[in-house]
Image (cartoon, rainbow, N blue to C red):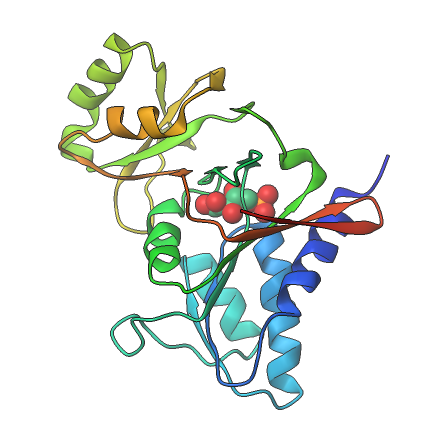
Length: 224
Ligand code: 5RP
């Protein structure tokens, strides 16, 4: 049994090999992205000039600890390279993200990026996408009627909880996790999620440009 943490670190370090002087870097969220933030911090400590845009409060904290100078989408609306994790990916590099609840900012930063590079361990591959719920971020006012509509469509929503209360995202919203067994047509599902009150979701179709997957003691590289 290979060490999943080692796979995450290998993937992260491979992706950080793409970072160049002067770049604006989107800093992803989650345990794999944390390895990338650490490695980018080492580049900065070695004298490389770059700026990061964190995709979550947690990543902002890590980036500050790593000594990465931060910027914003106001100052830099075009991001050169974003390195982020994923919960599942398929053969076309469609993704399920949002296990950590940061998918709204992650997708915004990804959409501003010239290049989106995903980093994962080997357990994240699933073709078709399956084995992980699809998170949908909703404004709290709308969560009940949206959940009813998803139920009617057979999408099996479960409101994400933390310590007995609804989990609240960095943007102050709730998450409905859709318990979908298998996603044969991610684009069709995306269309079903477009309801008033939905502010984002963790299905990323056609966004990732490439992916590094740690696999045992090596790294596999996939492109779209
Ligand atoms: C957070 C995410 C993460 O990238 C995803 O959950 C993967 O996390 P990890 O690297 O810890 O497995 O989308 O919203």
